[in-house]
Length: 247
Length: 263
Image 1 (cartoon, rainbow over the protein chains, first blue to last red):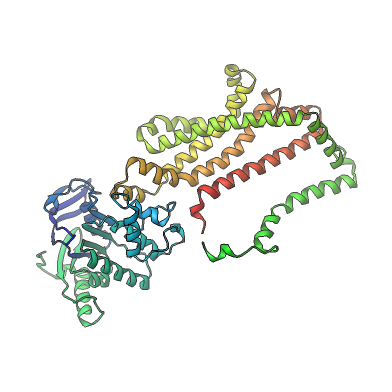
Image 2 (image 1 turned 90 degrees about the horizontal axis):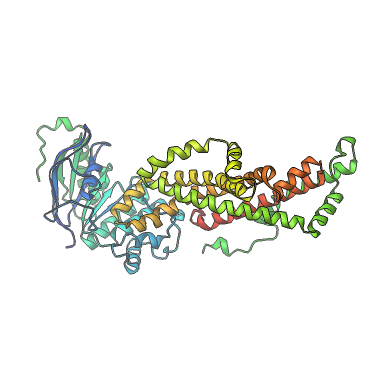
């Protein structure tokens, strides 16, 4: 098991007077796959940014493998929605820069893992949206991170590419067993990939749903059941009284 | 290597056509000149004939004055270009990257740049006298502002997302500068180079015509005084030639440094 545990305790974040995240509590086991869904502006991306230490918490704490997060750490990698690739570096050099040791061998391995072998010398500008996100994933996994945070990585892709990429993410997760946290507004994507789906609404964690489906997941009745259940929480959170977050 | 690159270009291919097409208007202009002189209307008396133009050019070329003037001007132009662009680039980078320097310098530069360059000339004549120093100074000033402004804009306009990415992926300061800032600002910097090459010639000719005793600008100013139309015409051709040369240099810099933008 490569992954490590993430423990989030009473976490809040304010920008000035504006509250973004309030009193979040989540406990993620090593190597687990969590998805966070919710409407835009509910604080889900901020949660990821706090885990990477791109933002500092206003109060509360985050523990990675029992140790508080106090700096940006090479064990935690982040995949952004817009791939954030260096367009002036070729595919291989982009991945090398993701490796903590700047290792060329590791970069070649990572490119192979995401199905981009043979494209090492290409300029990113000729890659399709899906290929760019593959590159971004290769850069994220090249250092064999213990935690992979994915901030709507497939949001800008077309439906078919998205399915392929979901399969790729699942494959990488199974092979490397890192702890994964995926932020998405696509409920089907969350059910396809995650063991736990956290519903966020209005700066708060609202519900944790354990998805007990065998992998690879098919879009059958059970799948639809989870999808509907999660959607119900997202769309009508006020009707579900007393939905306290419990793991 | 894509398949397209391996296909040999046909003699009548679109690419060759476009390469030839750029010369159609210049050739038409010269043809118009020849025809209008041949039709010899009264108003065109002062227009030099193509034949006398060629004579004048050959004369000046063989007695060495033309080569001398071109060399003198080119030396001033390039000295000014190097001083102005290096200063503009370095200061643009520093103010773009560093908040303190930005606070100190940027307002001043932004104020100075709005003053027309030729308005400095009388003051500078007092300090530098009339001569090479003044001309080089004027050229440097012209080049400096376009390089500074575009470099600054390039650094400031860098995608903030890349900044964050660099932090998450633990880029060293060196890597951040050489792998993100430098290449990321290059498109703007090269726009600066293109404009700088243009202002370099403009400032050179303006400064030389006022304060030189050699060079192309000086020759142009004198030819104007004596109404030597063949000389004036020749100088126009030389300017056009240097203009094209500057453009070629700028284009090849872009082709090299921005090769990643080509699909």
